[in-house]
Amino acid sequence: MAQIRDQENQHHEKLLELCINLLERVLKGEMEEEMTDELRALFVDKDTIMNAVSASHDIHLLKIDNREDELVTKINNWATNLIQKV
Image 1 (cartoon, rainbow, N blue to C red):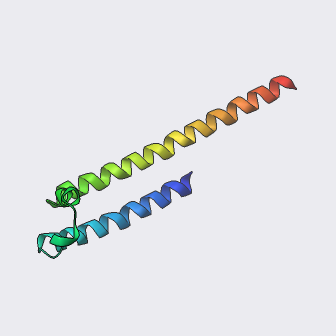
Image 2 (image 1 turned 90 degrees about the vertical axis):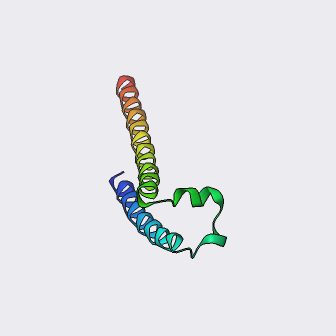
């Protein structure tokens, strides 16, 4: 799971970099026709986009943690049942 977390962290860093670059283009008026209204609403200022990207990152990490907990629980239950059968 550590490798998955590392991949998520790398993804987060790249996404944040891309979003900041895109924000600069939006603020210069270079992206008016290429963006939907919903997307444009995220690119109001740096804080808004940073919060959105960080929230996405937090959700991804939470899903990874929950999946890890689920796997560990199932493995422990399996091991307990196996030992009881022996």
